[in-house]
Image 1 (cartoon, rainbow, N blue to C red):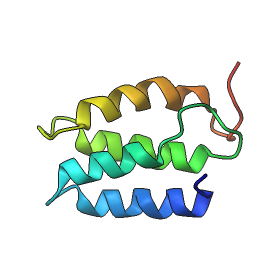
Image 2: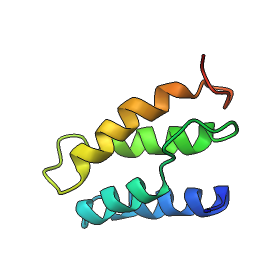
Image 3: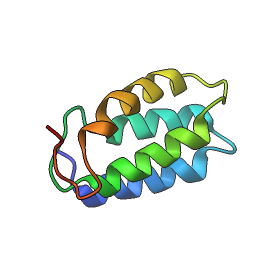
Image 4: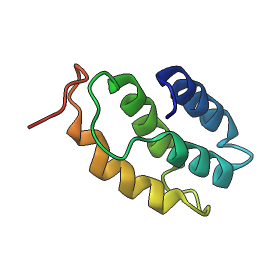
Length: 85
């Protein structure tokens, strides 16, 4: 299982890849995104949502899949990192 630090670093790297390698950025973000709400990962969700916004409209493989995952997962965590009910 990946640590929170690994996920944060992976999302920072993905953000840096967007201008030149958007497909790699989307794939990297997909790998670091949780599939279920986990307490304490609000920062990861915020980074993931920002990356999704940057990739919006970029015609690259994986961007649509990432957007769908963000659409489903991010709202499940509130601004305090708690799972929404």
